[in-house]
Length: 167
Image (cartoon, rainbow, N blue to C red; front, side, top):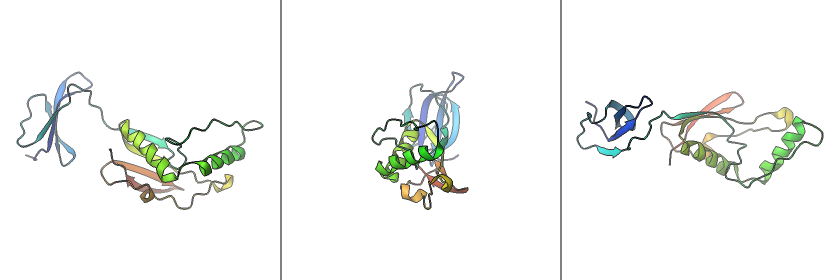
């Protein structure tokens, strides 16, 4: 039998049944009906009937253009109907006045992780035709701590992997 580090007891499943979840080295090792899991030396945590759900997936965020946690900026409409070049100019101005990328991206990651996202995919604005070149966005600059929660950062078709840590 796999040694168990932590036993979460009284987890409610979507069907209304209650189960115990045994965890070994950060991974689920066993699921059993509540009260039937035997452990020796494991830390036990009663989650009191809380609904157990899988980690959520955030399928589309923009870490490079997030303003979460930064100063609020009102929407500025285009002067004569929608114009992508004017909209990009407004965005570039907002980014120039914003907190550094690393702070804004970290704020966005912490928001997603805090709401239960364990997998995230971020796109990076790379569009030289409208004036948003992005030559060097590297997940390492976000100082993401390694663990099993993946963040896929897409940069001009080049997919790089980094990790985000739940605090």
